[in-house]
Length: 523
Ligand code: NAD
Image 1 (tube, rainbow, N blue to C red):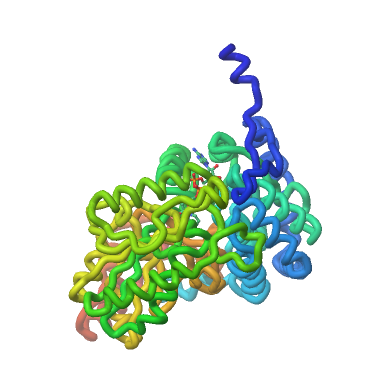
Image 2 (tube, rainbow, N blue to C red; image 1 turned 45 degrees about the horizontal axis):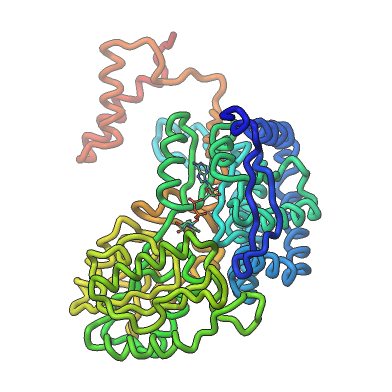
């Protein structure tokens, strides 16, 4: 029996979270299949690297053109499998990828080119230094379900344009969208073995981690991220970790309540709150608190919850029941600790098993889970503060540090506070849209991650830096070679004084002592 269980292939199902319909079932890739995929990628990568950046950019342009042509089809596939409203799928996923491709098409050539490294020390003036950026080889990517297209696609495009092969293990909940990405890349001209998708659960991800990849880019939860980091440390595998968040929103006493409340409602409920950058905690100056809560409550009650396929829908379902249970537990606990529920606070079974009403909570405290752990659902918990320093302290009182937002009519004041907040991105008077700014690096402080994706720094993660030093005097032995002796010691002391003594006279005397070393006999 035990053997039968081991032999039986594991299966994962792709399910429409709005209806419960099974869209397709897959057998999980076995360890052997993962190893074989990585071996094929290894064989194919040198050819891809040798194409050169220009040819790879041409393929990227082709990908961008095809994605644009199929934008509605892809957005629908995302909505079907992940639940979000179709317009959100178009704007926060397809558009983000089109623009990431634009960034790489415009900049990859320049950013990946060799760069001279001028030398400052007189001892090394006769050498020319340069910095080369070489692809790692194979980049493994493990991605989550909440942005099933934009996350793996933006990471993949950067890896590919830099000359790597990619093996992607998408979330077991969104395999179909990953296969759409594969079709687009193939049709654009990326060779079959240069971009591969291995479908499966966490065990398939763990098999990818054990395989002979050269770097791993992981996006997902903090607990999985910690497991990945531990396993990667064992073999010194470089990793980028894009993990969870508990992003605070700070509404200062001079904020525009109408604008800030609209931002809070969108920031907390976009993708049904299942965004790593969503507003998970909101701190409002006491002078605006009740008016802000009234505005948020009124706006929340106007939101239309339903199937993302309906273009009139604002908020779709959660991904699965497990996620709904986490949200319901956080809300119930807050309620039992004295929080006021101003809107929502209940599941909506009449719409389907995974729907939860957009919820506004007032009078929460920092002791309860809804202000400490990632809720990842349509909940906006709001708390009052009296002084800016208190708001900063509350914002920083978290193990997470992905992003934060500050709302004020005085951008300079916002900037000042932004510098005190411990997070990878701070937005003044906006939320979440930083993810769609292709030039902006994305990544967290503290438990929210290590490394960056997107923009120049995301591209840098896909290459190894190689320093190349070429000596322009091949016929000359170096001054600092053997053999040593008392005279040489004096000459070298002179050389150090020549560069670093405080007085000019000492420098000149140092230079005279050092000069003798040039002609000395070396071994
Ligand atoms: P998750 O950690 O459960 O899973 C992420 C991926 O890891 C999936 O593909 C899963 O199959 C795989 N996996 C699970 N166990 C594994 C193991 N032991 N070894 C290797 N792979 C394994 O996360 P999720 O529920 O899919 O995604 C939601 C989380 O992702 C949230 O915490 C969210 O904040 C975070 N997230 C972060 C960012 C960011 O950019 N910082 C973006 C999106 C989502």
